[in-house]
Length: 386
Image (cartoon, rainbow, N blue to C red; front, side):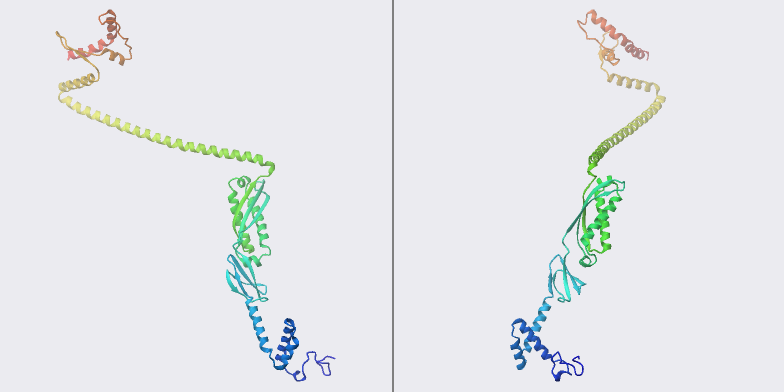
């Protein structure tokens, strides 16, 4: 029969008959707790029990032990976060808050716990694979990414394996970007742009997944065709480089010739303009002089004609050598240099040999002066007619 029913057995808790109807005795409970602690730490449970029976002298000691235990328990909640780290506080296993570097306190175990996360460490991830381009060619691509933890709480709780997720996202984004680009573009000038687009796409996917990761850099370390066709691609790349070099040389030559030609054309144009202005001004001056001369001629024809003749002869005789021969009986004659007249007509004069009184000199002088005698005699006759 149960002990708590009428006529039941003995009370298993050992309560006295006077305490069966009242609350449990706190002093008795503390005494039992003290005896148990004494038996654990020193094996003196009996002596403690005797002292407790004598006067309750163990009560203050128990309270001191309890307070010390509570202080130790509260002190265990102090923690220090190092520089470059973040502390994620968990309350009963759920995220509570994030703390920065320095000393902090949290409710000790089992209420709260702290996870330390390094948020300044630069982590790396690499991926190398053979991929298909937009123009249905195969290219071997290798990329390397550098990243760090931006949000510690998302890194710990949103995704189970964020580092593995980043590598999978990197492969997926790289395949998408390479699949939208042509092979020549990837191998030549588009390497940097392909890496930039891959990084942008990766960061968008990681933010959508809430991985708490931030990509700081992504570099394309290698982009080449398969080994079986690398020689052919090397020749094609060399030909493309030669084409670019020849084009640059031609452009440089054109850049040097065209300004020179433009300068020469401008110079000729300025010279033509100057010549045109000079001829126009000279013609205008000659016309004005002729008009003035015509007016003077109409007023005094004889004087004007005489002045024109004298000016013309002065100009002609001033530009040629002349010898004036004084003849005693007769008028003064002008001796014109026959050799200069003949040279002006392109005729060759042989050098004279022998004495001027010889017959050879006479024949040569007569033959050389025959053509010029008429030209000399003609102005003299005109002069005598006037």
